[in-house]
Image (spheres, rainbow, N blue to C red):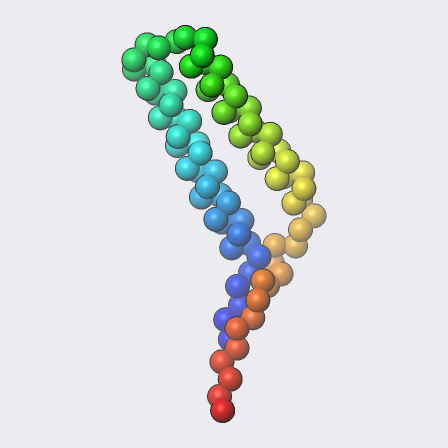
Length: 80
């Protein structure tokens, strides 16, 4: 019997957040390396960071009551 728990989605979401954090670090690194501290680039960086923070807060606020140990589905091998 194969049981897939609900926290499998949480792991996928965590990988997505790590990818977004990596993009943010690369973005800030490129801004520092090239010295392009214009208003537009800083505004875009700020908007990306603030939208990411709002999404993380909304996720935490919405999903804090979820039981992550619940199975999504059970797959049972049936022998005939």
